[in-house]
Image: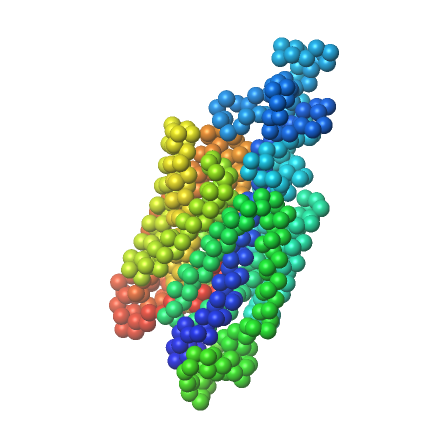
Length: 555
């Protein structure tokens, strides 16, 4: 028997697999969801203005009428078109004649070096502590982007390590790195150290999520992989909801980071609990160890396996091809570029909308909570519709729904103002729902489009494109803050919406994969979707979902 035949006899998603899936995928998925977007709270920049000169106990909040009059004298008014800001953030007035100070006195603007901050949303953030404002405001976007660079490095480096030394060892090393870096981040003394640790957090988080995901999925039978692949996204969303609650309760970046990092210590127990992946053991010729794990699983699942599990050719190496083979024909080149673009846009939009919460107006924490909650119906719809509508319809609909919703915010922002702020937020959340659903669909869709001989390479390259989207997301999300005003609030949403609509329309050029025999060779990939290929596949149709690998997740 081959490995999938064994899993069918074992029980495609029996008690043993469910336990491993919960421990290796679901629980770490919650923490990974937290760390991927926690920068919203760590690097949040509260409303601020220059500190009043020669005033020791100045605060952002108005203390008295005398305090208000001093602010009016020293702090310039902001652009009247920007109803979100009450004071100039970076300048204050310097008077020529200090013996007589009045609004009519001769004065000029200067940049300040000290600020006071509002505590309405955050009591403390890292950005506030080291004054990442005005000329240094770009550093918040840079720090967020470098985190995603860490995710990219972790996906590449730890993916290779996982294939070399095993899933279990790689997972445990990633857990230790994640635990140490996330806890250590709370004591980061400076911006360079903070950024360096965040890069490590990104790499470790990528390793934990993807390696755990592989361990869980490699023990799930072919008929249950689609279900298990979407369900893991639900626990990622649980992390977002948990983060919203903890951040609302604490409102201090140090305690938010520490309280959500310390529980990861429990993941160290994985070394004692989790087995090595039997698939990986087989690939290394360690057949006895693989069989021991499978028979233990059979005992837990209360099933009996045959005395001889593996065929003599179980170690036969499958045919392989290189990534460049995807660019050797016009058809594959066109499809591959569309897939790459969709991965990049989906990632940019998903993380960009998560990071753009503070620019929407209204209650910051409610907006962030809703942005996490809307993912649950998105994934439920994917589970219901993927095998009914097909991959192409689901993906295109998700992209167009989210993209058009984001584009429509330009009208509610431009013509509605504060009165229609609730509608702007609603449209942005529909955009988040669409991007979350598209993220769940795209890896199934693209994995089924790539020929078997180059599927892993294709998915790895697609994952790299997604990381590029993640690196761009903070800059797009923060562009609205830098521009300011109503136009600034609309810019990120318009960019996300326009890119999503374009990607969704391009995906219509891809063939449907539902109920199609998966392409095996490069020639199959070229012919896939044609009447001739369908005729051929009807003769030997085998509907089997591909086994997701490390490149087929949000991380």
